[in-house]
Length: 403
Picture 1 (cartoon, rainbow, N blue to C red):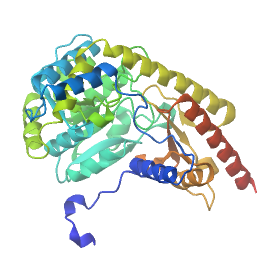
Picture 2: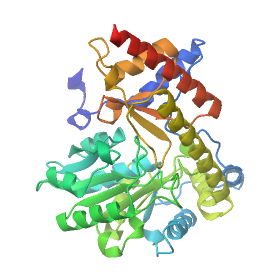
Picture 3: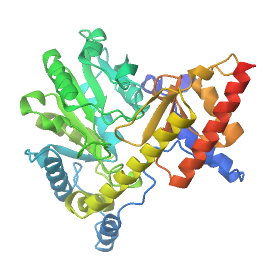
Picture 4: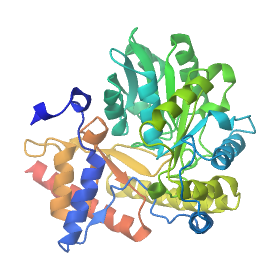
């Protein structure tokens, strides 16, 4: 069968996060009471003002093609919001390309910047699609292991150890999926200065920026002077902050010539993003009233995070985890339970599904099969039930290991 397909897709593997969702859905159809804490999307509805804007656009006949780069009203609204989030710095809407979700923006950037014999550094653990997208660009993804004593983040010294003349790019995600770790302003600055010295492009995925448990939004590449941003692409979208995953609106903010090239590429793949969704996103980015919905959602995530961390410390003492400072994931180690019959986190998650009907995502999806990702983008009741099931299975497996 492999001979049927081109080398373009030779390295592709299915998304492990979607595989977990499919298995949970299958069990539900069989009548099993599944608790799914594998989801990578907010469990909140799209803000009412935003949804109504999408409906109005449809009713007004905004149902035709738009410019490939997106409607100017949306690009201007995004530029204004980015400016407000970064202390009023100037952001040029002409440098923004709206795409069908942030994932397409990452794909566009990689395809335009990297090719055969190029290497792209990816701090690990990392979102499952980064290495796959780099492979699609015919470049080589290079996993840079994060420091467990530093919330699995990487330092300039770590990047240096994995850098040679073939390294052309770095994909940096903060707040991070799967760990919830957040790079501080000083850490970001050091990495941007390193990238400038090395002539390396930085693809800064800030899709979770507004889901931050510190003061204000998480630190951003836009917090720094223009001279550090000459080879930086900011990648973001409406999916997480505005609970708009199904609307499929993402964007890239790139230097002008790169933005033109990305626009040309997109014109030959998907053309512009969904028209009605773009008008809904205008409301999300332009209407300050929507920020109240964002703040309420982040407050709920913070409360759940605090409850989850407290339960782990009280009921699973000694279990190592990254305390999340953003996003909505808890990333924890399970290799203390490993035996000959349970050698990986993937097997641990399979046992959880079988024994407790609890769906989590194994760390193999993110580059390290000793860890597991738990999403607290779920109701308080579902989260509490999920932790009950996790603790029960953990104690059962500890008993088996002791025998």
